[in-house]
Length: 112
Length: 115
Image (cartoon, rainbow over all chains, first blue to last red; front, side):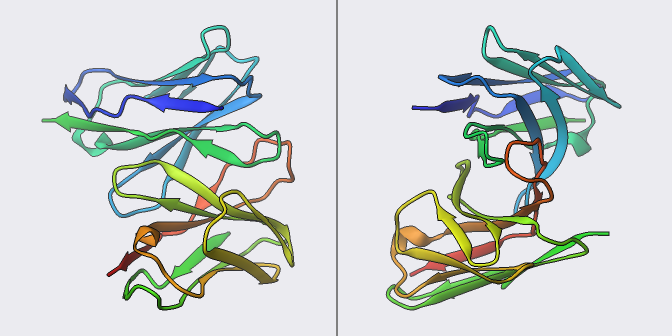
């Protein structure tokens, strides 16, 4: 069966450091992968999309990499701030029908 | 600009009671519409999706149902709630047809507690 795995343990880092979150998937070759941010009690908000033919994508302090051989995406937040504290979700369309399947999310805590 | 509204925001229902959650999208036409559920501390589980009026696909068999009576309206229902139906329900829309890379735009969610 398809699996999308994110580290379920919270990631605690110090303000100013780079946060790196991991998304691993199995048994599928997605055409693209998306990352979302979710704050407590709120709906997820889209951050970035990376296609299978793109190795890296950047947006301000965010960077996403996509290794289709390893079946892994890394999500980086540079110069992290306490306001970056949230749960980050990766998502894949495993059905080629615009139906996203989400990983369980990783909670990031940035301490001042 | 496009907006998505979802209500009610919170509700507490007894086991066996009916449920109706509503979602409407404004500022776009013919959106793909989705219902997801998020259990406490868990990821999002896709429940239903719709590519048009009256067209509903179910991803998970359960005692929930969905309907799309109008282009931009999506309703999640149950005739008899179970304790396991408790969770955070999220409506979402995307603007692209299947096979493309449509990002999802989520509503604010409805937190359901079944007692």
